[in-house]
Image (cartoon, rainbow, N blue to C red; front, side):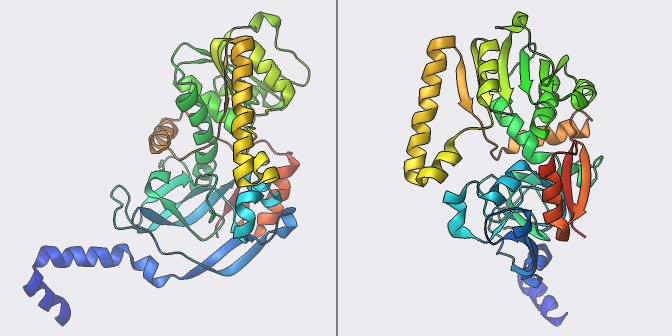
Length: 370
Protein backbone atom coordinates (compact mmCIF):
# COMPACT_ATOMS: atom_id res chain seq x y z
CA UNK A 1 0.00 0.00 0.00
CA UNK A 2 2.83 2.45 0.79
CA UNK A 3 4.36 1.79 -2.60
CA UNK A 4 1.08 2.38 -4.40
CA UNK A 5 0.44 5.63 -2.50
CA UNK A 6 3.88 6.86 -3.41
CA UNK A 7 3.32 5.95 -7.00
CA UNK A 8 -0.05 7.67 -7.04
CA UNK A 9 1.48 10.88 -5.72
CA UNK A 10 4.25 10.77 -8.30
CA UNK A 11 2.47 9.43 -11.38
CA UNK A 12 -1.15 10.25 -10.87
CA UNK A 13 -4.19 8.04 -10.34
CA UNK A 14 -4.76 7.28 -14.04
CA UNK A 15 -1.24 5.97 -14.56
CA UNK A 16 -1.38 3.79 -11.43
CA UNK A 17 -4.71 2.33 -12.53
CA UNK A 18 -3.15 1.51 -15.88
CA UNK A 19 -0.26 -0.22 -14.15
CA UNK A 20 -2.62 -2.25 -11.98
CA UNK A 21 -4.64 -3.31 -15.05
CA UNK A 22 -1.44 -4.33 -16.80
CA UNK A 23 -0.41 -6.46 -13.82
CA UNK A 24 -3.82 -8.16 -13.67
CA UNK A 25 -3.91 -8.52 -17.44
CA UNK A 26 -0.71 -10.51 -17.52
CA UNK A 27 -1.02 -12.29 -14.16
CA UNK A 28 -1.53 -15.73 -15.67
CA UNK A 29 1.59 -15.54 -17.82
CA UNK A 30 3.67 -14.75 -14.71
CA UNK A 31 2.11 -17.42 -12.50
CA UNK A 32 1.93 -20.24 -15.07
CA UNK A 33 4.96 -21.88 -16.58
CA UNK A 34 3.80 -25.43 -17.38
CA UNK A 35 0.59 -27.31 -18.11
CA UNK A 36 -0.73 -30.61 -19.40
CA UNK A 37 -0.74 -31.36 -23.12
CA UNK A 38 -1.24 -34.27 -25.49
CA UNK A 39 1.87 -34.68 -27.62
CA UNK A 40 2.98 -36.71 -30.61
CA UNK A 41 6.57 -37.88 -29.91
CA UNK A 42 6.64 -39.91 -33.15
CA UNK A 43 4.26 -40.53 -36.03
CA UNK A 44 1.93 -43.52 -35.91
CA UNK A 45 -1.47 -44.72 -34.74
CA UNK A 46 -3.54 -43.36 -31.84
CA UNK A 47 -1.34 -45.27 -29.40
CA UNK A 48 1.56 -42.84 -29.93
CA UNK A 49 -0.35 -40.00 -28.24
CA UNK A 50 1.05 -39.15 -24.80
CA UNK A 51 -0.33 -36.96 -22.04
CA UNK A 52 2.48 -34.92 -20.48
CA UNK A 53 2.08 -32.85 -17.32
CA UNK A 54 4.98 -30.42 -17.46
CA UNK A 55 4.81 -28.92 -20.93
CA UNK A 56 6.11 -25.36 -21.03
CA UNK A 57 3.81 -22.46 -21.78
CA UNK A 58 5.51 -19.99 -24.17
CA UNK A 59 5.55 -16.28 -23.48
CA UNK A 60 2.60 -14.41 -24.94
CA UNK A 61 3.64 -12.24 -27.88
CA UNK A 62 2.37 -8.72 -28.49
CA UNK A 63 -0.50 -9.81 -30.77
CA UNK A 64 -1.16 -13.14 -29.05
CA UNK A 65 -3.72 -14.43 -26.57
CA UNK A 66 -3.29 -17.16 -23.95
CA UNK A 67 -6.51 -19.20 -23.79
CA UNK A 68 -7.44 -21.54 -20.97
CA UNK A 69 -9.01 -24.38 -22.94
CA UNK A 70 -12.39 -25.75 -21.91
CA UNK A 71 -13.03 -27.86 -25.03
CA UNK A 72 -11.06 -28.63 -28.20
CA UNK A 73 -12.46 -30.19 -31.36
CA UNK A 74 -10.80 -33.11 -33.15
CA UNK A 75 -10.45 -32.70 -36.91
CA UNK A 76 -9.40 -35.17 -39.61
CA UNK A 77 -6.23 -33.08 -40.02
CA UNK A 78 -5.24 -33.93 -36.43
CA UNK A 79 -5.41 -37.65 -37.15
CA UNK A 80 -3.53 -37.28 -40.42
CA UNK A 81 -0.78 -35.23 -38.78
CA UNK A 82 -0.45 -37.85 -36.05
CA UNK A 83 0.04 -40.45 -38.80
CA UNK A 84 2.75 -38.44 -40.55
CA UNK A 85 0.92 -36.10 -42.91
CA UNK A 86 3.07 -32.99 -43.22
CA UNK A 87 6.18 -34.78 -41.95
CA UNK A 88 8.42 -32.69 -44.22
CA UNK A 89 7.50 -29.68 -42.06
CA UNK A 90 6.73 -31.23 -38.68
CA UNK A 91 9.16 -34.14 -38.23
CA UNK A 92 12.13 -31.91 -37.29
CA UNK A 93 9.88 -30.24 -34.70
CA UNK A 94 8.70 -33.37 -32.83
CA UNK A 95 7.21 -33.71 -30.28
CA UNK A 96 4.13 -31.83 -31.50
CA UNK A 97 1.00 -30.75 -29.72
CA UNK A 98 -1.96 -31.54 -31.96
CA UNK A 99 -5.22 -29.61 -32.27
CA UNK A 100 -6.62 -26.66 -34.19
CA UNK A 101 -10.05 -25.88 -32.71
CA UNK A 102 -10.53 -24.38 -29.26
CA UNK A 103 -13.16 -22.83 -27.02
CA UNK A 104 -12.21 -21.40 -23.66
CA UNK A 105 -11.45 -18.32 -21.61
CA UNK A 106 -8.84 -15.63 -22.14
CA UNK A 107 -6.13 -16.01 -19.48
CA UNK A 108 -3.72 -13.30 -20.70
CA UNK A 109 -3.24 -11.01 -23.68
CA UNK A 110 -0.29 -9.41 -25.42
CA UNK A 111 0.45 -5.71 -25.27
CA UNK A 112 -1.05 -4.99 -28.71
CA UNK A 113 -4.29 -6.94 -28.25
CA UNK A 114 -7.24 -4.56 -28.25
CA UNK A 115 -10.45 -6.49 -28.94
CA UNK A 116 -10.18 -9.26 -26.33
CA UNK A 117 -9.73 -9.14 -22.56
CA UNK A 118 -8.89 -11.44 -19.65
CA UNK A 119 -11.87 -13.51 -18.52
CA UNK A 120 -13.67 -13.30 -21.88
CA UNK A 121 -15.07 -16.51 -23.40
CA UNK A 122 -13.68 -17.05 -26.90
CA UNK A 123 -13.48 -19.64 -29.67
CA UNK A 124 -11.28 -19.98 -32.71
CA UNK A 125 -8.85 -22.09 -34.69
CA UNK A 126 -5.14 -22.21 -35.43
CA UNK A 127 -3.67 -22.23 -38.93
CA UNK A 128 -2.97 -25.78 -40.28
CA UNK A 129 0.81 -25.28 -40.02
CA UNK A 130 0.82 -24.19 -36.36
CA UNK A 131 3.33 -26.25 -34.35
CA UNK A 132 1.89 -25.82 -30.85
CA UNK A 133 -1.72 -26.97 -31.03
CA UNK A 134 -4.72 -26.85 -28.73
CA UNK A 135 -4.75 -30.30 -27.03
CA UNK A 136 -3.58 -28.63 -23.85
CA UNK A 137 -4.76 -26.84 -20.71
CA UNK A 138 -3.53 -23.60 -22.28
CA UNK A 139 -3.06 -22.63 -25.92
CA UNK A 140 -1.69 -19.55 -27.62
CA UNK A 141 -3.43 -18.05 -30.62
CA UNK A 142 -3.16 -14.73 -32.40
CA UNK A 143 -5.93 -12.22 -31.79
CA UNK A 144 -7.20 -12.63 -35.36
CA UNK A 145 -7.62 -16.39 -34.79
CA UNK A 146 -10.18 -15.80 -32.03
CA UNK A 147 -13.64 -14.31 -31.63
CA UNK A 148 -16.02 -13.95 -28.69
CA UNK A 149 -17.85 -17.23 -28.11
CA UNK A 150 -21.56 -16.97 -28.94
CA UNK A 151 -23.33 -17.15 -25.57
CA UNK A 152 -25.97 -19.50 -26.98
CA UNK A 153 -23.32 -22.22 -27.44
CA UNK A 154 -21.58 -24.34 -24.83
CA UNK A 155 -17.80 -24.58 -25.08
CA UNK A 156 -18.17 -28.12 -26.41
CA UNK A 157 -20.51 -26.95 -29.17
CA UNK A 158 -18.33 -23.94 -30.00
CA UNK A 159 -15.14 -26.01 -30.25
CA UNK A 160 -16.64 -28.09 -33.05
CA UNK A 161 -17.13 -25.17 -35.41
CA UNK A 162 -14.18 -22.88 -36.30
CA UNK A 163 -11.73 -25.01 -38.31
CA UNK A 164 -14.38 -26.74 -40.43
CA UNK A 165 -16.40 -23.58 -40.98
CA UNK A 166 -13.31 -21.51 -41.88
CA UNK A 167 -12.25 -24.20 -44.36
CA UNK A 168 -15.65 -23.97 -46.05
CA UNK A 169 -15.58 -20.16 -45.83
CA UNK A 170 -12.22 -20.01 -47.62
CA UNK A 171 -13.55 -22.06 -50.52
CA UNK A 172 -16.95 -20.44 -50.88
CA UNK A 173 -16.23 -16.82 -50.04
CA UNK A 174 -12.55 -16.27 -50.87
CA UNK A 175 -12.22 -18.57 -53.89
CA UNK A 176 -15.63 -19.00 -55.54
CA UNK A 177 -16.99 -15.67 -54.20
CA UNK A 178 -20.51 -17.08 -54.08
CA UNK A 179 -23.52 -14.81 -54.51
CA UNK A 180 -27.22 -15.04 -53.76
CA UNK A 181 -29.14 -17.06 -56.34
CA UNK A 182 -26.26 -19.29 -57.38
CA UNK A 183 -26.52 -23.07 -57.38
CA UNK A 184 -23.81 -25.08 -55.62
CA UNK A 185 -22.91 -28.75 -55.34
CA UNK A 186 -21.34 -29.92 -52.07
CA UNK A 187 -19.77 -33.36 -52.45
CA UNK A 188 -19.69 -34.94 -49.00
CA UNK A 189 -22.26 -32.80 -47.20
CA UNK A 190 -22.43 -35.13 -44.22
CA UNK A 191 -18.93 -34.28 -42.97
CA UNK A 192 -18.12 -31.25 -40.83
CA UNK A 193 -16.73 -29.10 -43.67
CA UNK A 194 -19.49 -30.09 -46.07
CA UNK A 195 -22.18 -29.50 -43.44
CA UNK A 196 -20.73 -26.08 -42.63
CA UNK A 197 -20.57 -25.29 -46.35
CA UNK A 198 -24.27 -26.07 -46.77
CA UNK A 199 -25.23 -23.70 -43.97
CA UNK A 200 -22.87 -20.91 -45.11
CA UNK A 201 -24.19 -21.19 -48.67
CA UNK A 202 -27.83 -21.16 -47.58
CA UNK A 203 -27.14 -18.08 -45.43
CA UNK A 204 -25.66 -16.42 -48.54
CA UNK A 205 -28.86 -17.10 -50.49
CA UNK A 206 -27.58 -19.99 -52.61
CA UNK A 207 -29.39 -23.17 -53.66
CA UNK A 208 -27.64 -26.36 -52.58
CA UNK A 209 -27.45 -29.92 -53.88
CA UNK A 210 -25.29 -32.29 -51.86
CA UNK A 211 -24.12 -35.88 -51.88
CA UNK A 212 -23.90 -37.84 -48.63
CA UNK A 213 -24.55 -41.24 -47.09
CA UNK A 214 -28.12 -42.42 -46.55
CA UNK A 215 -27.88 -41.81 -42.78
CA UNK A 216 -27.10 -38.12 -43.35
CA UNK A 217 -29.88 -37.25 -45.78
CA UNK A 218 -32.37 -35.92 -43.23
CA UNK A 219 -29.51 -34.13 -41.47
CA UNK A 220 -28.36 -32.16 -44.54
CA UNK A 221 -31.90 -31.44 -45.68
CA UNK A 222 -32.65 -29.91 -42.28
CA UNK A 223 -29.55 -27.72 -42.75
CA UNK A 224 -31.09 -26.23 -45.89
CA UNK A 225 -29.99 -28.41 -48.81
CA UNK A 226 -32.46 -28.34 -51.69
CA UNK A 227 -31.63 -31.90 -52.68
CA UNK A 228 -29.57 -34.67 -51.06
CA UNK A 229 -28.30 -37.59 -53.13
CA UNK A 230 -27.21 -40.86 -51.55
CA UNK A 231 -23.81 -41.47 -53.15
CA UNK A 232 -23.99 -45.20 -52.36
CA UNK A 233 -27.09 -45.89 -54.45
CA UNK A 234 -27.95 -42.87 -56.61
CA UNK A 235 -26.31 -41.04 -59.47
CA UNK A 236 -26.36 -37.33 -60.18
CA UNK A 237 -28.56 -37.14 -63.24
CA UNK A 238 -27.38 -35.97 -66.63
CA UNK A 239 -29.96 -33.19 -66.37
CA UNK A 240 -27.69 -31.50 -63.81
CA UNK A 241 -24.77 -31.18 -66.23
CA UNK A 242 -23.71 -27.55 -66.52
CA UNK A 243 -26.10 -26.45 -63.76
CA UNK A 244 -23.69 -25.49 -60.96
CA UNK A 245 -21.81 -22.26 -60.37
CA UNK A 246 -19.43 -23.92 -57.91
CA UNK A 247 -18.55 -27.37 -56.62
CA UNK A 248 -16.89 -28.00 -53.26
CA UNK A 249 -15.46 -31.52 -53.18
CA UNK A 250 -14.64 -32.61 -49.63
CA UNK A 251 -13.84 -36.17 -50.78
CA UNK A 252 -11.37 -35.37 -53.55
CA UNK A 253 -10.90 -38.74 -55.27
CA UNK A 254 -10.60 -38.98 -59.08
CA UNK A 255 -14.25 -40.08 -59.42
CA UNK A 256 -15.63 -37.10 -57.50
CA UNK A 257 -13.30 -34.72 -59.32
CA UNK A 258 -14.52 -35.93 -62.71
CA UNK A 259 -18.12 -35.68 -61.50
CA UNK A 260 -17.73 -32.16 -60.16
CA UNK A 261 -15.90 -30.83 -63.20
CA UNK A 262 -18.55 -32.28 -65.52
CA UNK A 263 -21.46 -30.62 -63.72
CA UNK A 264 -20.08 -27.06 -63.65
CA UNK A 265 -21.25 -24.14 -65.72
CA UNK A 266 -18.66 -22.46 -67.89
CA UNK A 267 -16.44 -20.23 -65.67
CA UNK A 268 -17.61 -22.17 -62.61
CA UNK A 269 -15.28 -23.10 -59.75
CA UNK A 270 -14.26 -26.62 -58.73
CA UNK A 271 -12.60 -26.68 -55.30
CA UNK A 272 -11.10 -29.74 -53.65
CA UNK A 273 -9.90 -30.15 -50.07
CA UNK A 274 -7.49 -32.86 -51.19
CA UNK A 275 -4.80 -30.77 -52.87
CA UNK A 276 -1.40 -32.36 -53.40
CA UNK A 277 0.84 -29.65 -51.92
CA UNK A 278 1.49 -31.44 -48.60
CA UNK A 279 1.79 -34.95 -50.04
CA UNK A 280 4.28 -33.81 -52.68
CA UNK A 281 6.31 -31.93 -50.05
CA UNK A 282 6.37 -35.06 -47.88
CA UNK A 283 7.55 -37.08 -50.87
CA UNK A 284 10.20 -34.76 -52.28
CA UNK A 285 10.98 -32.32 -49.45
CA UNK A 286 9.74 -28.79 -48.88
CA UNK A 287 11.59 -27.08 -51.74
CA UNK A 288 11.29 -29.71 -54.47
CA UNK A 289 7.82 -30.71 -53.30
CA UNK A 290 6.63 -27.12 -53.33
CA UNK A 291 7.86 -26.72 -56.89
CA UNK A 292 6.21 -30.00 -57.92
CA UNK A 293 2.93 -28.88 -56.34
CA UNK A 294 3.00 -25.60 -58.26
CA UNK A 295 3.49 -27.50 -61.51
CA UNK A 296 0.77 -30.05 -60.69
CA UNK A 297 -1.79 -27.39 -59.82
CA UNK A 298 -0.98 -25.27 -62.89
CA UNK A 299 -1.29 -28.34 -65.11
CA UNK A 300 -4.76 -29.15 -63.76
CA UNK A 301 -5.87 -25.53 -64.06
CA UNK A 302 -4.81 -25.33 -67.71
CA UNK A 303 -6.29 -28.77 -68.46
CA UNK A 304 -9.76 -27.98 -67.13
CA UNK A 305 -9.82 -24.44 -68.47
CA UNK A 306 -9.14 -25.79 -71.96
CA UNK A 307 -11.38 -28.88 -71.77
CA UNK A 308 -14.36 -27.53 -69.79
CA UNK A 309 -13.87 -23.78 -69.44
CA UNK A 310 -13.88 -24.00 -65.64
CA UNK A 311 -11.61 -22.96 -62.78
CA UNK A 312 -9.80 -25.57 -60.67
CA UNK A 313 -8.53 -24.93 -57.13
CA UNK A 314 -6.94 -26.62 -54.15
CA UNK A 315 -8.42 -25.08 -51.03
CA UNK A 316 -7.19 -25.05 -47.44
CA UNK A 317 -8.25 -23.44 -44.19
CA UNK A 318 -6.57 -20.16 -43.38
CA UNK A 319 -6.88 -17.62 -40.60
CA UNK A 320 -9.55 -15.09 -41.53
CA UNK A 321 -10.80 -12.70 -38.84
CA UNK A 322 -13.64 -11.45 -41.06
CA UNK A 323 -14.72 -15.02 -41.74
CA UNK A 324 -14.61 -15.99 -38.07
CA UNK A 325 -16.68 -12.94 -37.12
CA UNK A 326 -19.28 -13.87 -39.74
CA UNK A 327 -19.27 -17.48 -38.52
CA UNK A 328 -19.81 -16.25 -34.96
CA UNK A 329 -22.70 -14.06 -36.13
CA UNK A 330 -24.38 -16.94 -37.94
CA UNK A 331 -24.05 -19.20 -34.91
CA UNK A 332 -25.58 -16.50 -32.70
CA UNK A 333 -28.51 -16.33 -35.13
CA UNK A 334 -28.92 -20.10 -35.12
CA UNK A 335 -27.94 -20.42 -38.79
CA UNK A 336 -24.73 -22.40 -38.31
CA UNK A 337 -24.08 -25.37 -36.05
CA UNK A 338 -21.96 -28.50 -36.29
CA UNK A 339 -23.24 -31.42 -34.18
CA UNK A 340 -21.05 -33.07 -31.58
CA UNK A 341 -21.29 -36.86 -31.50
CA UNK A 342 -19.14 -37.70 -28.48
CA UNK A 343 -16.82 -36.10 -25.94
CA UNK A 344 -13.73 -37.44 -24.18
CA UNK A 345 -11.43 -36.10 -21.49
CA UNK A 346 -8.03 -34.71 -22.49
CA UNK A 347 -6.28 -37.79 -21.09
CA UNK A 348 -8.47 -39.97 -23.35
CA UNK A 349 -7.17 -38.40 -26.58
CA UNK A 350 -5.90 -41.71 -27.97
CA UNK A 351 -9.34 -43.32 -27.60
CA UNK A 352 -10.95 -40.21 -29.07
CA UNK A 353 -8.73 -40.57 -32.16
CA UNK A 354 -9.67 -44.24 -32.49
CA UNK A 355 -13.35 -43.38 -32.40
CA UNK A 356 -12.88 -40.48 -34.84
CA UNK A 357 -11.08 -42.69 -37.33
CA UNK A 358 -13.63 -45.51 -37.04
CA UNK A 359 -16.21 -43.21 -38.69
CA UNK A 360 -19.03 -44.89 -36.78
CA UNK A 361 -20.26 -41.56 -35.42
CA UNK A 362 -21.95 -38.74 -37.32
CA UNK A 363 -20.70 -35.48 -35.88
CA UNK A 364 -17.58 -34.08 -34.28
CA UNK A 365 -15.55 -35.67 -31.50
CA UNK A 366 -14.46 -33.20 -28.82
CA UNK A 367 -11.97 -33.26 -25.94
CA UNK A 368 -13.17 -31.66 -22.72
CA UNK A 369 -10.45 -30.15 -20.54
CA UNK A 370 -11.32 -31.24 -17.03
